[in-house]
Length: 562
Ligand SMILES: Nc1nc2c(ncn2[C@@H]2O[C@H](COP(=O)(O)OP(=O)(O)OP(=O)(O)O)[C@@H](O)[C@H]2O)c(=O)[nH]1
Image (cartoon, rainbow, N blue to C red; front, side):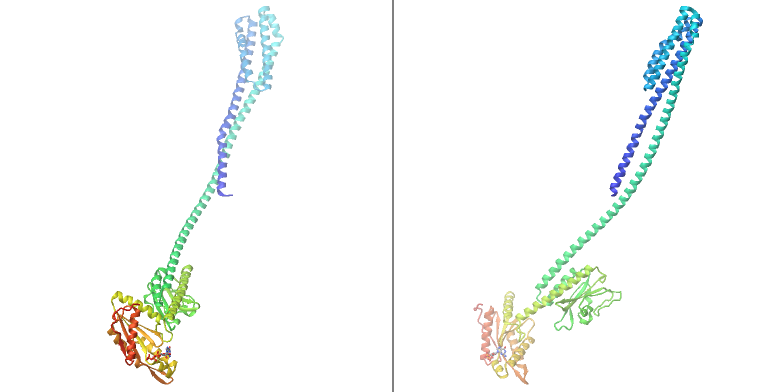
């Protein structure tokens, strides 16, 4: 049974007991009133019967005095009795309740009537016939017998009245005792019930307190959970943003910059570094860092890191003497190293440091693990994308950019030059008598010459210049921010470098020369096609001018439109 139900039952019992106690005085009062009325009635009956007896005795005494003296004055008590007795009898009749009482009272009334008639007869005899006749009648003993009988009847009544009064007194006492006992029992019962209610209430209150505390704790927990969910949502949102940004990254270095800008928000209160394998996969370069991890090494080897060795995360609790990686700079700090793995291939490592990280909540470490997984995947995608892009724009034989890329970059550079008013030059380069080389030494030798010339170009141009193979043995070099004069000088330098180089093929040294045509924006054209055409014409001039030379395009203006 629930405590609330118990308390309700106890309260109902208390109300019942209290009601009973409240009704008790009324019940007792009724009983006492009845008993007292009966007591008063008994006393009145006794008094009336005693008065009746007294009247009868007075009447007899008056009769005796009159008989002896003949003096009428002695008859006064008799007359008083004659006058009073009917009223006394009337009162007595009213007090009689039970049939037995009424029967006994009737007997007394009849005895009284007989006695009073005998007294009246005696008085009459004395008046009419004198003392002797009256004395003779008295001597018969009728009057005395009647008086004795009445005394006996009234005496018995008085005795019954006394018994009745005693019984009523006992009843009053019993009522009083019962009332006192009932009151005592009610008080004790109430105390017991109140005690029980108090105990139950205290227990309920204690339970309610505990429930309240539990509810408060649950509310606090719910608030924390909501905050955590909101933080997690925020992190998920930011990580989705990071992944989206990485999808747009055009190189590994750019993706590292993107990662470095997001990690402080994704892993707040932590520091760390992002290491990626270099192209030759012999070392890992630090591509990004955040937080206080500025002093971390720029280069690490795979053997320096337990996570890279194992291919799984490695946690190190600073100050607890765990297994620290060799690249760790501050052994007092907790550290978590996570390999960046994609399709079973380790591409790098994310190292994270921060207070309490080794003993951090599992979900936080799981979150860092998930982040490392996503980063691995995203970086691998970036590499794949960069590689595919490279493949689509790089000529596989010479490793120079292809015509497609040249078209793209030339268009872009011309637009930029137009905006900035800076010159752009184009060198169109063709190997001399290449057919002869092929025919003499073979196609492979020709390929080797092409590779050698491409290398010479790459090694002798600026990082902003773009060299590409347009097809066959024809190559183009794009020179941003370079006017015709400079372009011609640099073309000649390239020509000399090509002529100076040779390749060893089948034990033979093979050399090649190149003819170069030069055209510049805006001097020889302001569109891509016009510029290349002008350079082509200049090349043609160079070929006809004896080859192994540089020719600058004629000043034709910008009439030829793309
Ligand atoms: N080995 C090799 N040869 C190529 C390649 N592409 C084109 N060639 C050859 O390059 C030669 C080009 O010859 P031509 O266009 O006649 O010109 P050339 O012999 O260089 O003579 P000029 O340009 O007038 O000096 C052809 O024999 C092509 O087969 C290539 O990828 N590898």
